[in-house]
Length: 308
Image (cartoon, rainbow, N blue to C red):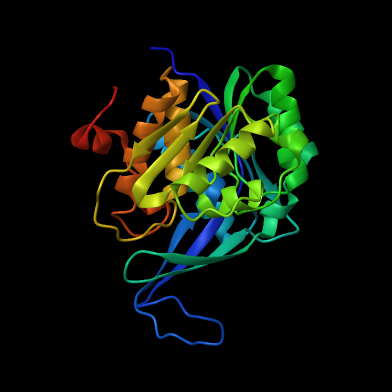
């Protein structure tokens, strides 16, 4: 089986995580429990997911020259990710995320972008010119929007499939949306992008239709423990999530997107690919942390495999 090449373009962070009983409201101080640091960043999480699930991953990112940047680069190399385009920024620190996780696994995250904010179109253009035979590009929104816009234009000109995970939530222009092959918002992100308040399944369907009408070719609204709603223009398909005991939802969306890219790169149709992504995401929430929670291919095989 020929495995197509996936290029992930996005952020690298070091996550600083505190476990606590509940997420604080404004003005509240909460005494937390355990604290740990874990490599993260939406782009990095997705690149690691691609590698662990057997994909051919190249990662374009920007990190600081500090200890966090050096640690991240070493970890990427250990995962088997092509790091030839992991750029070093001498002027800014590596990105950092402050994460609070409550007793039911929900989280609250604040990100200091650092070097991620300096990953500009010119940087990415130089990298893309060095990479041959890109089949899929996977993007998120923890890097400048102008960079995301540039990449979608580049991909459209080269007939490269583009998957955009529109997180953290932000407004995207209609012109940019038209260049996206697959978009994967959660309910809140779908609400921001479409203008439709999403409180139930019918709302999610309406939001997906709005995004499709704006030009996105395929819309997947991720709905956490319920699964994922897929709209291709020919109808809706609801792919249920596997029932698991949730420990921490951090990086679940990133695992979904990385797994989706891997399945598509292996030639799967969209619905089986979404089933595979849902399984990978479900396994990730049974563990604490971001990259520490990302499953390996053999873990999916042990649970249930839709394809090998």
